[in-house]
Image (tube, rainbow, N blue to C red; front, top):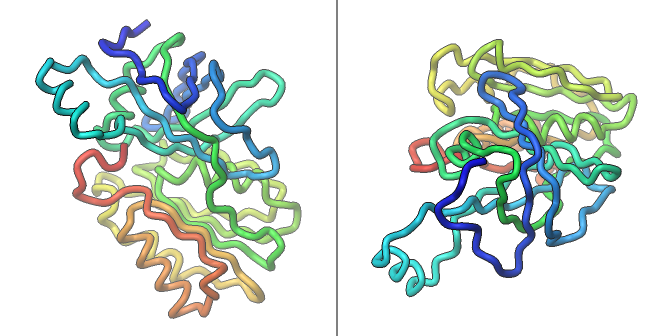
Length: 257
């Protein structure tokens, strides 16, 4: 077991214990945890819920510890989607894109069963309406766990068009759904994430479904805004039907975690 130099800070938080780490692809790791101390009750009716995770900080020098204490800064944390929660075993799967070199990615790379991590949540996150004619979804690998969870919850017969950008073909994953799910995989093939514009082009070139359409998009913040503009300005999607979230920002240190 890895031994953090300084344990998680206590407070109005819960605590998770790592039970397993399973590689799904070369750059996607499934973190399975058990709830040692709960924080909020989950909503079984919501297919997209998130936890805010606070990895243990390294041991600080006396001067650093004093500076942090007097600044009132909160422990560093990142928000991740619950990919799957098993009500019988109480285990939670969190799929982590090993993207960037942020605090949480460094922690999860070194984590071992038995390690502890503080968290808050779960809290509901963006869910497109399934009472619609079609759903268009677009994301890079950072939003793939949420897209997969939403696809699993989509009802039979609903038309779902998903566009997913990943580093290369080894990062494609099977996506289970009762819906009429059509997936377009885009490969960066060596190009840095957030630089290709491929997601925007692919969404623009989709044969747009008729009727009421909900749009769900997540990933790099600039690309998310561009796809939102395509949906509103070019496809006439009503604003309340757009669920758009920048998970990370190109060029920002530690982003994504």
